[in-house]
Image 1: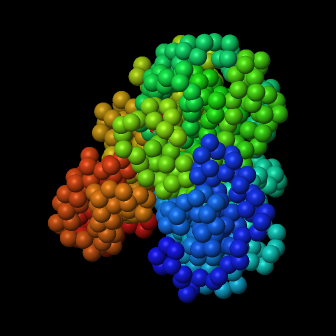
Image 2: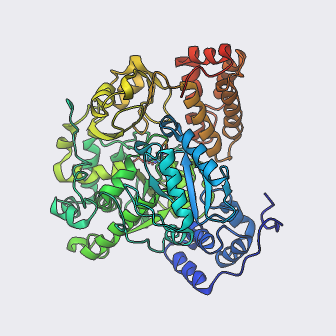
Image 3: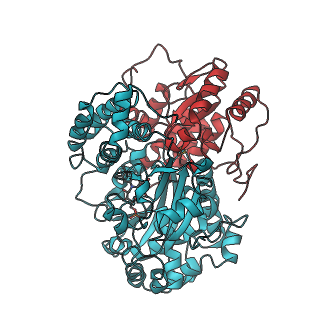
Length: 208
Length: 424
Ligand SMILES: Cc1cc2nc3c(=O)[nH]c(=O)nc-3n(C[C@H](O)[C@H](O)[C@H](O)COP(=O)(O)O)c2cc1C
Ligand code: FES
């Protein structure tokens, strides 16, 4: 990884943030006694717009919060949900901690890697799916658990997992998880993570 | 099924729509808040003290005592709900938020009344998209019905709850790292003293409580401390939600009185070991319990004192169950990898020690270990335990101690076999 602030030849250049995004950031800053508390939310908004926490986004956020770029970059590199490389439209996170491992996370991983042709930490060339490993998303009663843009699919078989990513990739409708909603694409989920209002909590949701 | 659950916090879980304010109000929701707001704050704190409520985030600290540290007459003070649940094997807070977010909000307003906080925060793990959505919706419903906002129940008390999502870091469950994160910084623990009760969020007096802890509060206020003490043991009063996972027929959250034997949870409520296999081991309290229990500990009563007396810790009450064909060394290696990844990097013993332990354990599990590795591991862990900046380092010693003490034969088998002797 390049030093914070240094341009990386591997990273595409990004347009400045949209004015609406900056307005939303100001609203988030006003939510807290100290505007800096909105920093992570603001980085989620950068991610919604640029697909990752871009250098350009870090610079703008630093300017708005009156912080140095290094201070913002140090936060951006600390948290696993803030990514420095562009994410696919859907992030598929496979849990590998013991309860999921006992229930077959290993074969899920192999099936997904084979289907997608990428390994953990990589994105399919069409930009549809990023595959990653996670460490217990606390859905262990649903082991093996896989999250798709942070919606938890439980008790997945390798076949069902492959079917799921095929549908996600082709833009087809996917079934809702038993607890949760149908996953929304990258931009929508990151706006929600930023705290700008989620989609309907019951939309497509399974049981209560 | 022989055993039954004791549903206090989970009483509404069976109903569809239990997450809505309509369901909550129809079953006595917010009545405890009404009662609390008509009671002097110090008396509310006293009730929680007398009830003997202890923190469910892992450490079991007496909640009423914690509230009592706050100087109520020097505003602003803050309440922060720790909803960053990340301990491997634990999933109770998630389900409490998904199924009964109003119980949590009610508890938060009561706690805030007791400590004089006009604002409180729910710091929710970022990966919990669904739970956060449910809490967010519940907060707006509560504002609409006037159980949040200005002049709640005509009491003159104003209160706002703000939902804040994390961004992926186990360490942010540690309360001072959580506060750093909530202030927009890297989630690294703070030096103590000052303790959060003196200088917490924005350097103001702050109480941090776990989701399950706060969810107990409305029941204590509604029914009285004596009623609460009817459940559980003298030193661990009340009920506890145990998250049972792994090789059991019915993994899930089970609410029982403290002191219920592990056997009842594993064999009866969770339906026993899958596929007619036998129990090999279980964690009494998540990855961070020291050490894992073998099958001989199946009759340990699940309360703080009994689990500690049996040589481990109750932690979050996460019982990960391993059948006899599962490799405990492999499971411990995965826990170690978890700690190595989640170490925040602030202090050297934890940052370096977890890295090396993960390497050694990986080698051991893969059958490339040497006999000396067991001593080496114990040596490294002894240099982390008690010497790290926060408890994450102490937690990280648990997998090593489990392997080197309880399952040393299994570790030696890996060395002799030059490979893992188990399927899973
Ligand atoms: C590394 C680490 C992780 C922790 N994670 C959590 C957590 O996810 N949730 C939680 O409530 N407490 C967690 N704790 C405990 C908190 O520091 C704190 O004790 C707790 O939130 C206090 O609330 P309680 O008294 O209601 O239990 C963690 C502690 C450490 C050291
Ligand atoms: S172990 Fe996979 S969700 Fe907990």
